[in-house]
Length: 80
Ligand code: HEC
View 1 (cartoon, rainbow, N blue to C red):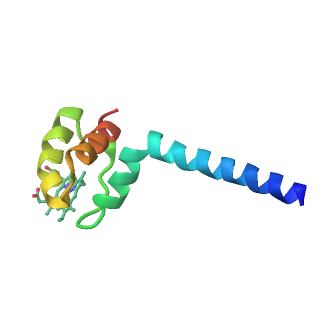
View 2: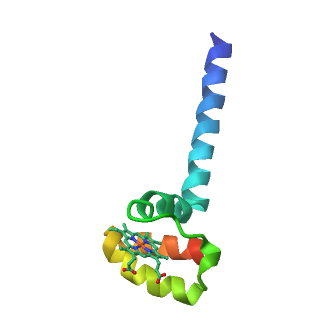
């Protein structure tokens, strides 16, 4: 019984740590893959200069109905 509980705790910790890593580190990337893939291919982040990405995102934000936060996270991912 003890063993099972220990196992469950380790699993919970492991899973939540993984969850958190995705949320904090890859939010922009995750959003990019989720939101920008519906109408055209996913452009490579190296295809445009950071300045151009900001202009494009201004337009695509409206097309994808992003919030300001989502826009910021995607720009961060695309321009870093
Ligand atoms: C509702 C459909 C739609 C969604 C969602 C969408 N796009 Fe687009 N996107 C378009 C269309 C249509 C074009 C090409 C025509 C134009 O430039 O308006 C385009 C063009 C582009 C281009 C090329 C622009 C250029 O000047 O070469 C990029 C880069 C791009 N989109 C990025 C994104 C990103 C990043 C997202 C997610 C935030 C996104 N798109 C979401 C419809 C969409």
